[in-house]
Amino acid sequence: MNAPNRHELFVLDDGEKSLEVTEDTKIPNAATFKIVKQDHTLGNMLRAQLLASPNVLFAGYKTPHPLHPYFLLKIQTDGSLAPAAALEAAASRLIATLSALEGKFRREFSFKDGESGGPAAAVGMAGMEGDPYGGGGVAWGAQRDYLDF
Amino acid sequence: MQGTHSDLEPSVRIRDLKKDRVNFILEHVDLAFANSLRRVMMADLPTVAIDLVEIQANTTVLPDEFIAHRLGMVPLVSSNCEEGMRYTRDCTCMAACQYCSIQLKLDVACHNNTTMDITSNHLEVSSYQMNDFDNVGEGEAGDEPSKRGEYFGHPVGKNDPDVAPVLICKIRKGQELKLRCIAKKGIAKEHAKWSPCSAVSFEYDPHNKLRHTTHWFETDERGEWPLGENANEEEAPRDDEAFDFNAVPRKFYFEVETDGSLGPQEVVMQGLTELQSKLAQIVLGLKKTEPEMLTGERVDETPQAPPDAWGSGGGGGWGGGGDASGGGNASGWGSSSPGRGGGSGNTWGSGGGWSSPAQQGAAGWQV
Image (cartoon, rainbow over all chains, first blue to last red; front, side):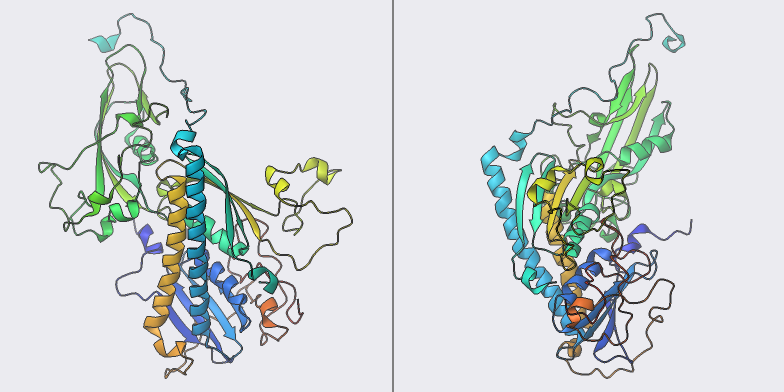
């Protein structure tokens, strides 16, 4: 009835910003990023990548409430670069890793295609023959029933 | 995380590739990275699935809702759905049109004395006609339909005699089912019927050297927890081996099993692309909102109070940072580790607390 549309969990509203920055007032070189319409998929990945940087002192994320489709990412750096720059570097690094991996996957897939004459030929969907539901059905007797009239 | 590890390039080895599944090993990446790939393949790839059902006649034993639900679960061929179709919410049409939907019809009646199966093979894709009563104009013309693969929108296995169809209902003599379905593009975050994967298995550390899980046993741990196949890929720990506190998982065993709507290759490749576009959105968002901040200058903006008091919630509290801080004090953020997130599965960072699965110990230790 008054349930919000499910797609509001992952589609930005009109004019909604995907990212908001709040600088921390009490900690030097720290900022909190509110990343809207994203979840652990992105949050945990960014957190891990940020921690791999020697200039990042702290990185952590949380989804404050499971029904609210955003997460907060807090970053503190050692001052040699801004938290936003650290986040951008982490994201770019991940994109580079992913595209390198994409190339490797493409190569691996083409090898596999070559050796088996295409994955389609290799299969035959073993075990799929034979109706799992018992199929067909039995006649319920040849005598006429009310449905014949 | 550890300097020595991150120097290695990520690598992948496909162990097995079949029509509906792929088994591969991903190495030299973070646990978080591997888990994100798993999550994105399961929940973020668009496919087509029946979303609206108009029942014209139903004299079967199953109620309309039951049948509509079963129809929604039928996998439909969705190759290149990303480009071949629009989301209905983005389309300019009134309800549904050829650019944002597929129409399927089913009209079956039983006239024999035997039980008849209504299966997914009875679903026929039909193009939109001008006289369809709700066809009130279609969206802006586009080239989407030309990008669709062969049999786009057809039930999986309809054109393959080796694949058993999906049973929808059984009918007897005199019963009939006639309906019209509108299939739409969507992702599994909206409804699981849009997931291209029927299962994704994900494993690391088959010998449990990292002790991310605890094996309950009665008398003999080894005997009661037989090793899986993936254990052959890694060296078994020696009996006298000391626990390595600094070890992190670097080798991940995946098996991606699809329901046939997308091929396994397409699922993996699209998953990688989708992750990249998510990250690109972050970079774009940063450039758009705060261009000055990236150059390291101060922003002329009254700093606002943070949206909530950090670590105030029960079980909240920051727990992260540790190993990257180079022994520095992370400025008073609670730095004793909350342990390892949540077991060995996929629940990292769930709940309200901050989590840092790769935490190496209390901050201040040079690890």
